[in-house]
Image (cartoon, rainbow, N blue to C red; front, top):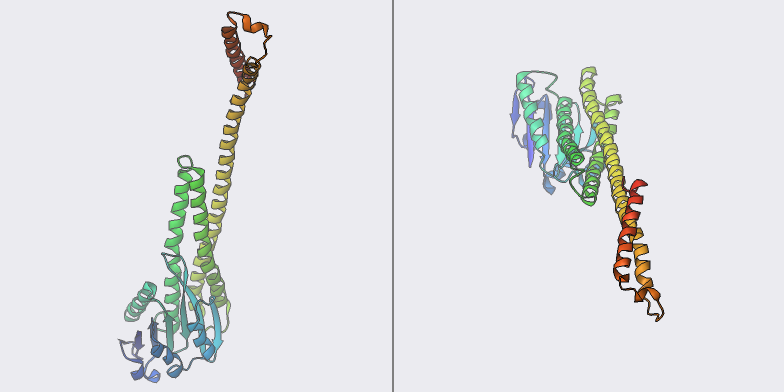
Length: 319
């Protein structure tokens, strides 16, 4: 489906006009949004707008790395939206010129609808620097980047919850959750870092059609991406610290178990020796003829076991 927005020289906004009926010279600028386009609609990128074949090819072959290409009178942007369910990147392409903006995406994007409505509202209210293709492109980028924050905040909430549950769950379960969080952070990083690099290029490029005021707005998006990148790095360090803490906790628990088993084994070793000696089947064993030998050996074992236990305790084995 193709959504169109045409702005007249007097500032009137017209929507829903078929592309075949749109004459660019009759309007101040237009925005055509290719939302889940069919093959026939995709052909209009060539037959109506006459975009460069390489740019059209990039639209068809997903998923491209975020980038900015310059063609004659047209800038081509590859952006990444974020699927908040899978945290996978989804491509959004923009063709920007002085009198039109063309957006192209294979999936429905709530961010695009929000940007669309905001641009219409700003044109009507005449607020800010709205009214041009560059302003609309900024709104699209801003909405895409804003969508990154809730996913990262959810991950930080999970990290805080992991820290609080460190003493109530098994180390195996906690380690699995830590690695799950690290995997989600890695997915976000793969989306955010390339977008940050692209925005840096936009802010510092002399080819992008924007004035000084517009660059301030794009710089604000770049600042948001820098903040997101820093948050991801901090969260990754936190997961590494949690992982090391859980590994140390598991080692301490294992050492405690091994120490307990060692003490028990050490206490029973001499008792086993005594039982083994008196379990031999020699005919000549003087102690076997003693009427109280059985009780004497048991008493010896008890005294020996208690004595060894007390000795280990004084030596600090149970601290």
